[in-house]
Length: 287
Image 1 (tube, helix red, strand yellow):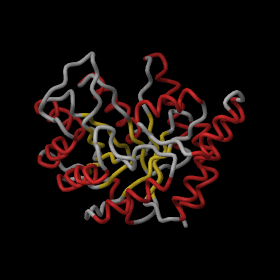
Image 2: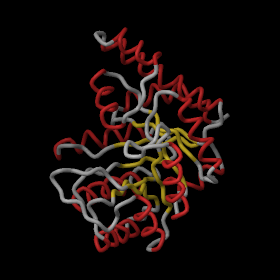
Image 3: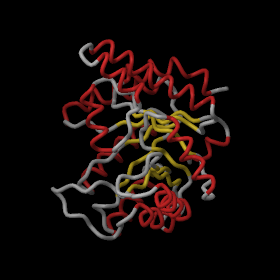
Image 4: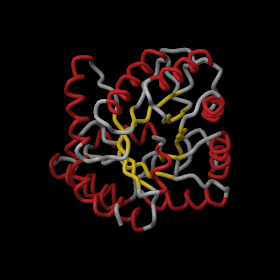
């Protein structure tokens, strides 16, 4: 099923997982998927690391298992930076053969270990290629606080419009901790004529190191309320866990009250935290 069709029926809830970092942890990874399955997400997306075909194969195997064994619609992350067109065609063929219809098309992050290829310099290039070479539902990333490499909000929206015009059917945002950024972004997108569904990406942050890493990688702003929570509970892991869950729930309650199309939870492969959030918001998603 193409996940973009779900938004016509309901407010969507989806999860993101990442492949296990060690081959010996595959069994525990699928135990995590089993627990997430019980929460009845509308789809689960599977990330892909840097490095091209090897990582894409692992992502494809997991996404195929999620769909064909667990009966949950799956989305494959596909970074274009380390693919040439021949390799990309092979991936699309493999996805079709596995019955996977949904792709999150990304430029991808540069990795000093690998030399980038030049066939897909931008996500919009990969999106156009997928649109021309298969019948897939194409998802793209978007950035309420602007992409780190984009100097202005206007330019960032223009770039997003390129991606939508190239064939994007739905959008998932980068994580954010201040909902006002999402509302301002959504308004800019509407003014630009972007009318595809936009899911809000929410990450429950439950330890200070995780926060520092997110700020470093994504450049997200940390509002005063959030910083106050971190500073108060940073030396009390249990309290910080509870506060992080509560903060994510508060974000989702506010987003739902303001008509968000869907919620995409960055689960960090933690079913306990995901379940706690789900139990607090499940009735909101049907309203």
